[in-house]
Image (cartoon, rainbow, N blue to C red; front, side, top):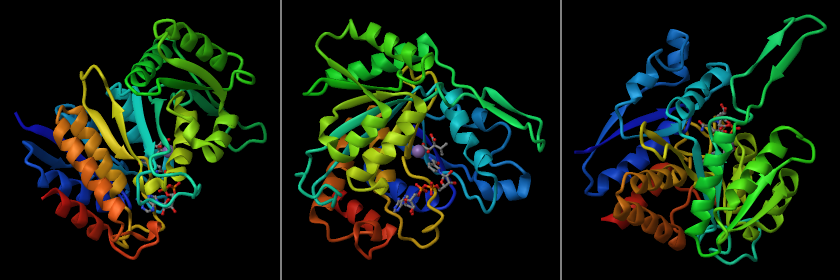
Length: 348
Ligand code: NAD
Ligand code: IPM
Ligand code: MN
């Protein structure tokens, strides 16, 4: 049976980087089929929706979704543009968002004295609840007493399962260290609960060293001592913010791939770069496609194509190490397509 992949390029640089990821996947001898869904803010301009009403049903039969990026404020309100992404994460119960950050050889990083591979962390971000629930409301629109409520919602089930996934991840890594991100000094309901539930799960993992950091301190530590982190587990919003930092300290957001996983495999999982649609460089053909290509490697790994995943990763590392073909975010003057071609060349 071929792997049925739904390609969802989206907006801005999304289609540019997904084209390169597809090219890389097609170079490998995989039994794989692609269906492309042209859902984006251009569709909104035509139909008033960024994706058709039944988009979840349309995606359900696929083995995985490879998404580019959503959003273009010139065409559609931002919260409507990204709504399909957040809906997919919830509807397909993709409760784990895996976001690795490694300073591969050949990538310039802000902490110039760090040796290649000195930074190797993975953030396990809770992806279906917490600060990202659809609970809340707006009241007294336009009046002086206008109010907005955005409710965070944490469940024992939700915290337990993300903590378990993070401990399992840590257990498989040499350092076996886990940092839980909290803010229980200020958020006395949600984050005190988070700490308690994580501590409860920790009892089953005596081999993993668990520590806790406040999110503000963790943000600082990720900038000054990123090598301190092995596995990190966080709530939805904290993980969102911290993974832009972990990306930039390991070379930039153009390198950061991610997976939105449903470990039960009851529904498709989704793979996507951490970055957005980058309207400032969209259409210029200069976006770094490596984040999308690394996301496709994560997809192969999740689909059981371990060899293909390793091949892509090795080709990317070889490409980075040689460092002759570079997009402008890496100080080069090559195009998105040049980078894709250079990686493809190494796979052949
Ligand atoms: P962004 O990640 O799109 O861009 C931030 C900066 O990083 C920009 O300067 C951009 O040029 C640069 N950048 C991003 N990806 C790059 C790449 N592959 N190569 C080179 N440079 C790259 O974040 P933003 O500007 O805050 O958001 C732009 C739009 O994307 C908004 O509509 C936002 O809602 C959306 N967004 C979508 C996703 C997603 O679909 N997963 C994620 C984040 C933001
Ligand atoms: C990400 C993005 C999304 C998020 C946006 C586009 C809704 O920033 O995947 O990091 O906040 O999760
Ligand atoms: Mn983000």
